[in-house]
Length: 112
Length: 112
Image (cartoon, each protein chain N blue to C red):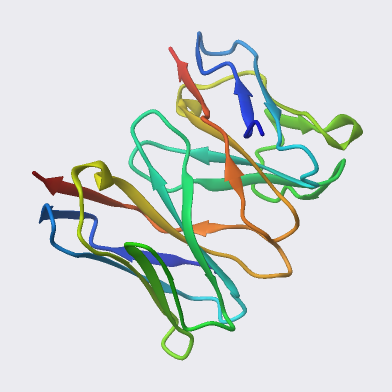
């Protein structure tokens, strides 16, 4: 069975440009998470979905970040406009409720 | 707020020796404690987890212990091998939010 799939793996953009990341969770997992991981630190939650509903987006910078999970399966995370400080790894994870969360490989974003 | 402290930040051991990583959590409502291994350029991989109704869990060379009273949990790796070298993260979550609060990570180096 395929794990959590993210794309792209790497993205380099100029500041003020938009960028989008895509995540395909493990089949049947109703809970989907987007985490942000800065260099040398542990992941931090940006947003959590239960099916298609965003149930925790308290740490998502809503002035520039947005996310959606159409039909409760795939999800996209968008940044517009990107800032230099957004350079980080964006991780997607999925789980069945509070069961084990499985992470994708992540998207490494570099804003120049 | 919710916090997980992890130490040491770096750990170097000789192949065959044991390694111990310790974490302390702040939220007494936390009931789920996973450990993740992250290799360079990859997403975190779940290696073992424990729930609050269990004091200890073992899987081959890896074991986790939980002391709910002290709000401590630890990862024990015995007979370490060079392929155990990676960054290890502890995390904690509670049933009301599913949000994983990660520690700051331990970089483990196993010297051949």
